[in-house]
Image (tube, rainbow, N blue to C red):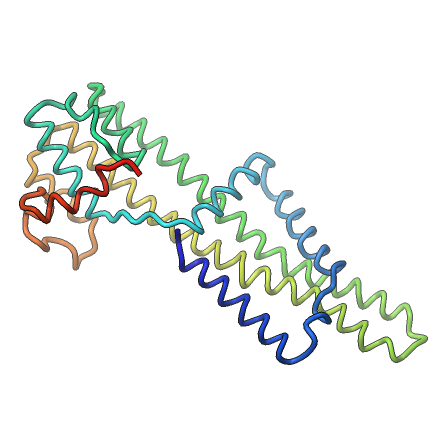
Length: 274
């Protein structure tokens, strides 16, 4: 679970609610017609921008990516890959077939190695799967970006509708103030929907998509090295550039190869099925 997303939404909604409630009666900020104009119009415009299948598939994918967080780090995959290549060099690639690997993408790559597939075939299969997976996440980010772009526009649209209705009935001057307040509520709804929910989630999805692309590229390189039964020391040198600068070469060879008690314990989360 990505607690940053939940905490941000909770804090944002709480602050906005308290700011409204402490300054005036909260009920005057509730207007169902204005809310329906903003929400209904925003989602209608977003559905027009994207294919029906893409919209209904990308929304759940985007929400899942925004509210979940993969705890595995690039260093964990390098440790596991070096452990697997050592086992493959000792007992053959087929011995990796029953390895318990939590990441399904990594597991698929290892299964292809155990099946005796050649490097070009493995590269084609994994690259295509990575491209499709990343594309779904990127479409999810674009969907939330579209929602963030459309919400303020429909908020302004609702305000214009309210102003037209107000100006068409100027016989009672005492009603102008309340009517103006109701007209402005749709703009408020649009701004909150865009800047508190849609746009932050879109930015988070873009960041996670970039991180996922990097992790999958690392996994593909790990699979390539395992398929070729690369020397573990050379493999570490090839894979280390995927790590942040401050994490490279720390902890000695045992931190990668599983030597010592601490190295074995660090690999346990990746070996067990969640």
